[in-house]
Image (cartoon, rainbow, N blue to C red; front, side, top):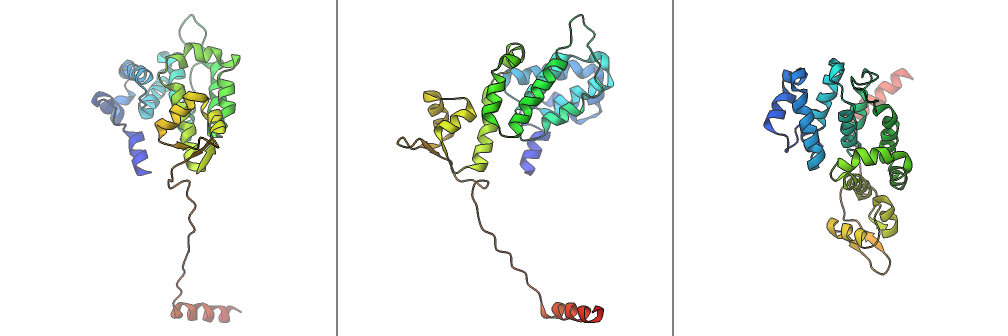
Length: 244
């Protein structure tokens, strides 16, 4: 857990310049918002992720409403979406309360219409309702998000699959391939290739996939021993007799 927290606070892929901006008082300097936005788009193109740097952008938008860029906000939320079950998405949402109703542009703000969709997708991931997530994500309702945003986010669908795999590893020792396929939105050779990439084994006769043992999917009994010394017991009995 400490390792996860450390990686979240300071990803190994974070450039030194961004580390300086995020770790010091310069994170509140509006002149640096362009650098942080460029770094966000680097994350979009490279499959890297840096929540703390992205939160710094949202905080700058709070302090400087004239800097607000809805496309940047949407991309931040898309990256945070696949951090489930971690609460990055909610952290980002908490910084949108004071955002301006519209950007200083002639075009309408796309965020109000897309935010409920993004929130619904996030909730489905949090609830491990993966088939429902894919159904909503591929629906006409989400066409604008797909065509204008997630299509540009390299590895987005695979990042969603990684969320599902984390949940499966924590809850199963074995799972049917058809069921796993609905979680990953994969079937046939694509699913087989994905399973092989994970290093999992599939029984060709039953279609059952074995999940390697890990601390989360192994049930171990715990025996608790309580040692009460005689002097302590005498004190308890004496106290009970006096208060009776």
